[in-house]
Length: 258
Image 1: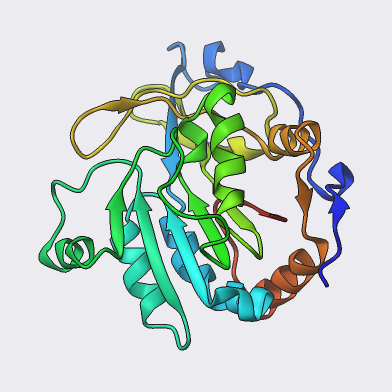
Image 2: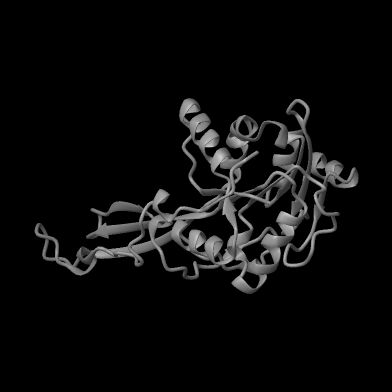
């Protein structure tokens, strides 16, 4: 039986709690009388590629838990198609956004009932423990705590073996220098603590979404405050399998007991 131990905050990277913008953005260049200029851009890193690469690793970590999988997130048709190719795995998907631009393959999955569009702020149309594992990606980041408090328990409700969360990351790209001599500095925002709103991110139908820049420490505090426990047994298996396969995720990921 998997151990049920509260999440240990010391296992995660510590957070500074703020975004340290470089002061050199407003300083003069030592080689030029021109004032240096800076452009700060937040770049969203999608977790879909992480999920696709993680499927064989999830199988090693969860073994029988991959029998019936529900994927919740964008690109649901792509992920479900990949899962259905796995041996002894049934898969379904919930697309929280829109599928107007779906190709024929995706439309076929929708017609057959493998993928459906559903607003995850409301209860999912599934019975309790309908799936062995629920994988959610690029979705919880857009929910305020009010809706997150309802959605996470509902995702856990339909799962028997646990919930895997892939949380989006952002990169802070800083273009600095003087005209014609710009350079780029990139800093991962996943390690900074206080959640703030990102610039607008548009769905496939042009509807703006605000993603919260939530760090691993924010998520850990949230799990602890809401009595959610990390599956330490699965975490160890997942980390070992990731190391052997040289899998280096771009997104944050958590393995929560149902």
